[in-house]
Image 1 (cartoon, helix red, strand yellow):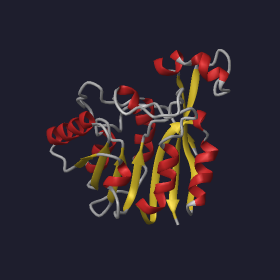
Image 2 (tube, helix red, strand yellow):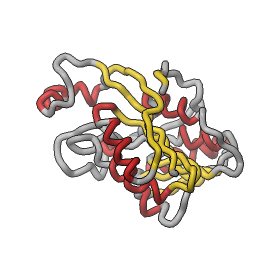
Image 3 (tube, rainbow, N blue to C red):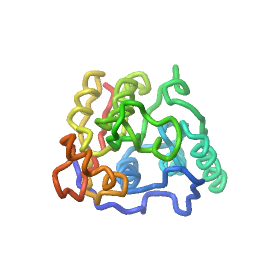
Image 4 (cartoon, rainbow, N blue to C red):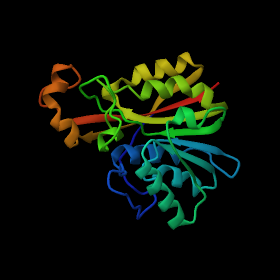
Length: 228
């Protein structure tokens, strides 16, 4: 496991982002560092779940991988397609829920920066920018779906890379993946300042026991899991 100093050196530069599309942030940078350590090539099939601007998908495509990117947001799909076109990189970008759009397909590598911010209310947002980060009261609304789906998405020996806040429970993610015959571990960590969304929910997070009083930073983790 590594503790990473976050930079944007591994991400494509000059990405455009249509309004409402999630822009690369600290979590994207941490995941990009982990992705850079994976062995990719022309025969590697990669899936990105929740592509946003396409930053991570394009990082993999630039290394020769065959990449499919999926997002529930049409604006994100359009953004990723535009960024791929501007760079002349082959990238298959599809719209919809990842489980429906990948049915019957398996990949060598799955990379994802899912929504993981704890939010009041059981129902996940179906529209608006909050869809990119709100993930239910424990922040695991999408994480748990990915954990359950991972064995069906990966080829034997395939790898899942997923970033989320330690606030959501890294140990629970590792345990859920292990139930699906994945060898999982926390591969990287980074300590970052709270953003505006967390700051706006401070009182609620403290009441839920998800944050301590006067807390100002959160830990991000990258979970790496290999399908046995």
